[in-house]
Image (cartoon, rainbow, N blue to C red; front, side, top):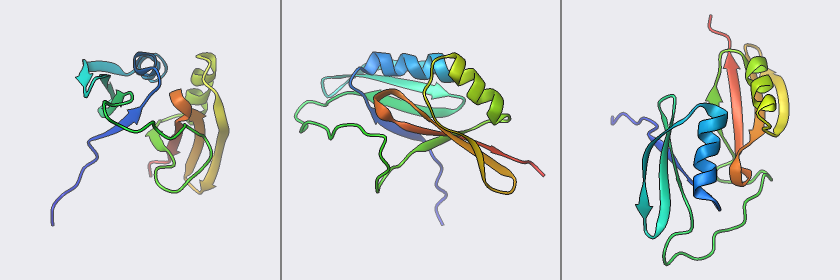
Length: 131
């Protein structure tokens, strides 16, 4: 069987540069590429080995569906693992990030919290006990 690995996620942003800067400022990302794709500014941001590709409305594309934090079918959120979720939430709050759900435990050995990224992207923090 073929081995599949997560490589990247594409995010569509109203303000491409501001979104890229947010992932750098709030999550410690680094811009690894800046350019243009189908008449839109594009940034590749590396967040500790995870690639986030951010771009805007593309040439010839219909107007994108408005962003929403409301849960939906399809992509609901994506997450980042941390060693200490409470410290991570405190740090994000200090940086002015909107916390959607404070840390809680959905099952033994795991804590999760949700926060808002640019353009109403729903993001998750997760902490798992390593036994």
